[in-house]
Length: 373
Image 1 (cartoon, rainbow, N blue to C red):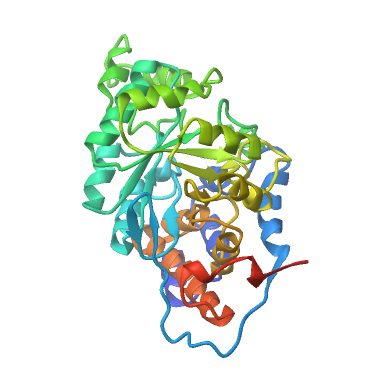
Image 2 (image 1 turned 120 degrees about the vertical axis):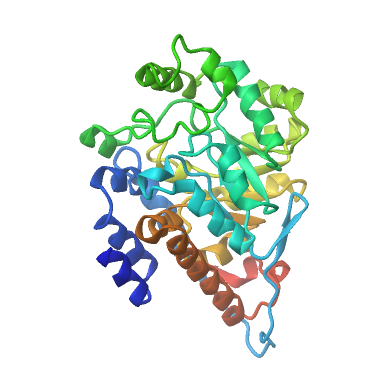
């Protein structure tokens, strides 16, 4: 409690949110949230990419009033920011996704629910009322489970399916091996599986009678190295919801995505948690946007920590960004209120960046404001 009171008493820089959270929650849980795969080359590259651009501002423009709203998949949101899908949020705070989704709803920002959320997609949806929400899908190794989750998401008012395509298997996260820690294996990411009627029908015994067997089955179905582009066709059979691909970093895949008529792309390397020595998302964003040519929205995550990062991503062509770890640190420190404080801080920085750069609306932000080092 003292750490929470301390963080409330003063302004925290974004890196301080991380440091405070490290001293406040279980070390294994913190490492799972904060660390990356292998020697964390991709994790570092994501941040370093943003530092390769400086901002060139324009002067003597009336920035007394600015407009930060954008429209994504038919929804107008007050800022070009979404809550990225992060699973097992109960390891940071008992309220987990219930707290973060309430914070998102209070800010009227879209929330992306993970397949491996600690609470079910229906419980999370109840927190959000009419606020836009998307469901992130890890395409299950069991087709019937995948279909069930997609249809549940549609019934619960989710307005898009975010197919995560960079995780056919789990990346080598060294800290988790050192800590001998798997929050999914321990049941912190079972909210959607344990509430799914099809998944439960695959079990020999009810979950309460043999939870370990249920967790083993979940892990068995979670990884799906056989998933291909055909999954898009199968999702289309189950729902009319828009489909976004999350995990695109190669321009040739962006071309294929257009051929498969997906509704949006999320340029992502899973926050540096999958392929080590992978490309930074910001480094490939512009080329992917050039392939897409505005046909579908292109969003980006991985490495976004400051308001100036949002500005740079938009200048390189992004429609909006997804923020992840910063709100998790806020969640760890102070639940829903911590999430709101961390996110409001980043949004305030973005508005300040817009004004000081001399821009009054999102459409004005382009590459002319960037200088490459």
